[in-house]
Image (cartoon, rainbow, N blue to C red; front, side, top):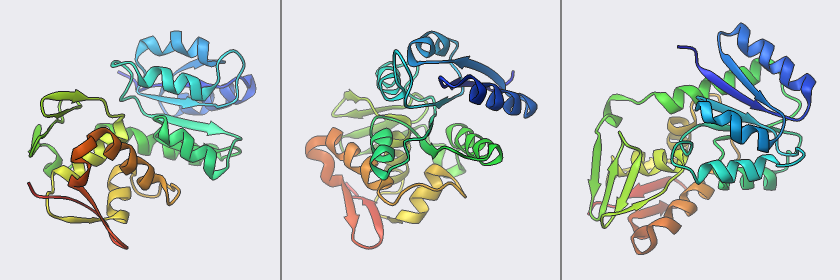
Length: 228
């Protein structure tokens, strides 16, 4: 079965160009020209979404927020491809649930490389990540179901946040350098701004509430999940 990519952009020429090149790579491409159309198109459950920000009827940010609220779509990788290229735009996109943020214009080769990298990250796991259940104190992580429980109450984590907490919790007591965490979660040769990891850690801590102290910042090095 071919990997399905949903492209959402109001510029028809861009959609057709990306579609042609992805189909040459063997992908099955679904298209939409605004967020409202994309809400219908995503019902086929694509493997990844390439999403513009500024579109009529419904923009990319609103679309991203809507689908991240739904269980069926919360773990689909979302790549913003947009002319809004400031650091503030990128951080906001990541905060609402995007997995990657790419500024236009971008070469088609680079875009395809980033798509493939995110697909690998969404489907691959190393040997030490194959534990289906991770339990640290009041936190229980079910990697198979992509679910986190805190004192038996289910918490909702977008995919990148889930991967980060899983990675740290699977290595309690170990200091994980920022570079290793970024490479392990986002993959090799994928550029993300320096604050990306901080944004995700902050969102995780907010959801953990009183247990947020389990994730320690080791100044100048990285992060550690406390042994319980």
